[in-house]
Image 1: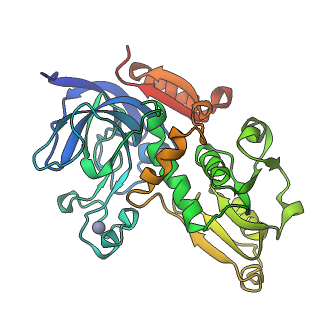
Image 2: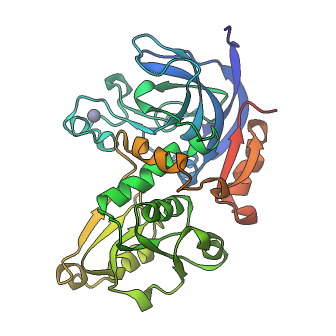
Length: 345
Ligand SMILES: [Zn+2]
Ligand SMILES: [Zn+2]
């Protein structure tokens, strides 16, 4: 198959400025596969990238880290699924050699941002999937199970992020779980926790929470009435208020997983430390997802125990990226995730 010499891509040209442009077609690098992108979403992290808040991002930059597609070609020395395979993408690929990578913790790779070591943070430090094609390390690819549509496959990484938080929190069948933050990842976490057999109460506010009600067993706007009651609490809101609530919601001896505040600048104050010490809480951070966690999450999608279709609230062709971006950023019409379709006109 002959591939075009050029493609269309979203380009973050410099901090605060983007456009949809024609750019040279990427060639698959050693160890990479060339993926024809069929579905690609934007998330709040893309706002931070556009604002120039990620040190590892070099402008001009092709963003996009929540995507799926079809392998069209393998690069040199790439041992991976064959061309034609439908794949979802996991975002963090470690160098594979450092102490953390040897533990499988690609998300904590000690060679972050050093492309020459093999490290790749797709859509952050290397070009991503808000484009018609992307060269992606085969280590990042997950073959989509039968029964998972290519659109749902764009949630591969998000589901890995949510499942990793539950694994950190040792969430088990029969437990009472609180999820703080009814955004895309929080709603994946709520559904996965229920799929694991837990009973889930979702905390948030207003219309966002009301829309999310069907993804949990119960919802509440008032954490204070439930302080000290949950076996495990999963936080994906990213604010200091949410972190304080999360810690207070845990029962004595319970677990708290904080996953929302991935950027710098959110400080926790106003919490009595005895809540943690006398409560003997496990307070855990959770960052993204180590290698292969997404592989454990995809079967829940295939079995229908997790539904991402209703979380994918808006769809646009890639050419209308500016409109898609505004829809997401302004949360128009209750936008949760906005999906771009790079192969559609
Ligand atoms: Zn994201
Ligand atoms: Zn590493």
